[in-house]
Image (cartoon, rainbow, N blue to C red; front, side, top):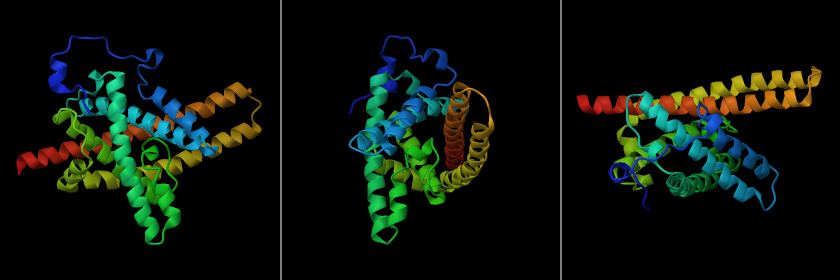
Length: 256
């Protein structure tokens, strides 16, 4: 797969940056809206469930890219993600998607083979759990690990002219295990805390729905804000923790 990264971008004429208009400050929101809509269709089952799940996971990856660029830059690094066209971002997301999906399938089948069939199904939500709440605490740590691998795949692609390499990312994670491993553990704990916080807010909204005389539009708007606020918060926290862990691993390597 060919995508334009650093060397190619230097030869490109300047072009306007892709913009989402009123969503400029909420760059990941359009993709999260699409992902949420597809999740509703997938939960309904039927022949549309699988395509909807694929579109949802791809949308979460695109939201991850949008957040990753700003998180890397906020940590003092440089990223060319914002300079990729929409088509290039989609190609990158699809290349990562099928590799991570094969990994999730392999781990799920392995988990089922040792007698944890119930858990294996939840491990297939590893990509979805980067933005939306997972089903189990183990699944929340699993999504943290998947997010770390996705970030390392992106970093590797930027340094190697768009080459997507899952095994190289796994090896990189092993080499940087001290700081990135710690970041994954911290992120898993934070995901658990977010789960309990989200449950408290969800209960409060449910009580509001049952007792309030507000219009249906107001109730729907509150629920909309609730869903996407936690999704964007989860993405920002995920990228902030992992980016800081990656940065600390580079500092440690430079000092050694």
